Image (cartoon, rainbow, N blue to C red; front, side, top):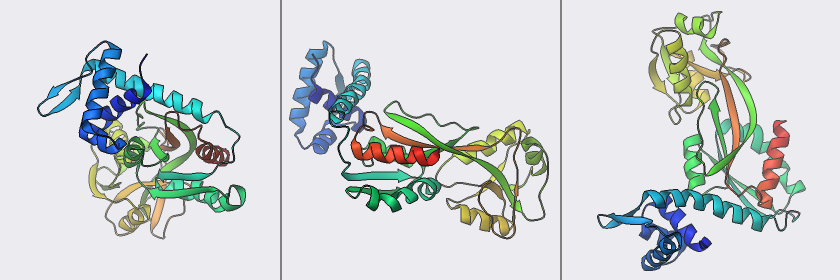
Length: 295
């Protein structure tokens, strides 16, 4: 029978890449990690690591077992947490997410938390989806709020599980007086040769713009990149380009929203956790509140 502690060492080696980092992460020694992985290889009946210069790397069998280890350890953790599902949630939930989801979904919940669950604390970090997934992989946050678009779906790693929260239609932000009508492809053809404004920390809207422009028969001119939607609007007003903006949010004077239809552009928001973690009472409560608010 495979030992869970040794499976954890293998999973961490797959994630971190070196025995020294595994030892530092788990508070043990490199020799102990090496010895325990050797025992695990005997239990598994196959070599799990091989020399790679002065380091080691996982063999194909080692990589396969490491993927199984993530699932096995998650199931064990879920079973342990499930022993007391009715416990009053107490502890700190670390959340990383994009600004819109934090404002729309998380802040109203956090504001009501002291009266509903006084022993539950939420720490908030603003990050784009790729950054969120890295933080989850490193176990530096407990919950991630991510997004993608219907025209640019973002696959998630098999070490996490996602819950759909809400969707939001997006339009094209253009300078006032330059609004046009038609399908999304007709709109994009109208603005062929115009500079585009896209996100500086995530490629999702960049992918959407390129996809629709390709369907419209041309390549968009990506000129400026900014993380802030407010700054995107300021750049539009300054005549520096056009860009995607949420259809349900007000715009500043000088910006007009052009609807995008056939195809529509829809943002999809998700709550993402590591496998096996959502049974932890504080996290389970927060996920339930997010899902309820989304409905």
